[in-house]
Amino acid sequence: MGRVIVTEDDFDIGKEMDSLKQSGVGAIASFVGIVRDYAEGPSLIAMTLEHYEGMTEQEISNIIDIACDRWPLADVTVIHRIGRLLPHDNIVFVGTASAHREAAFESAHFIMDYLKTKAPFWKQEETEQGASWVDARETDDTALEKWR
Image (cartoon, rainbow, N blue to C red; front, side, top):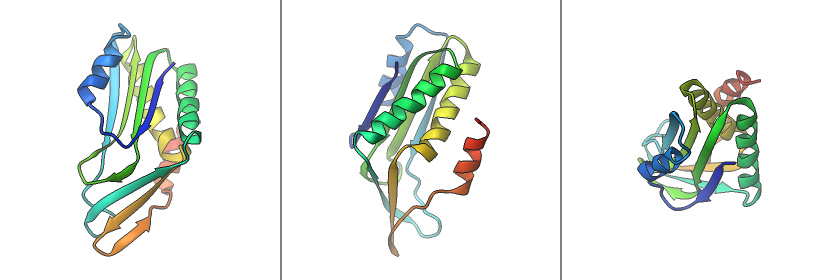
């Protein structure tokens, strides 16, 4: 169960929510990540995301499977963009559908925390001072710990 899309194309949030409604459940929770217009310091010009094709999709599917084992989910959609993105572009969509709001909220939060630390994506930030790769953040690892 679950739909995983890794793409350079933008996504339509309303269309994705409507798709999750088709599962006939009582609750849908979603998270949409947007490229910030700042980096750690100077203004962000663009962010480029790379991934390990095939491995990335499999890892996201594994994350969804774990979520489905923990919560009674009827449907899940994860869309993650790659390529060069500009400030205010959509970057990630996580949507979960369940009969109950708590399961929908918690599972969406869980999936996003796992995506930040376990999915093989690499981010490069381009600023006025040049480009640099973004290191893993300790706060993301800390967020993941609460689910163990």
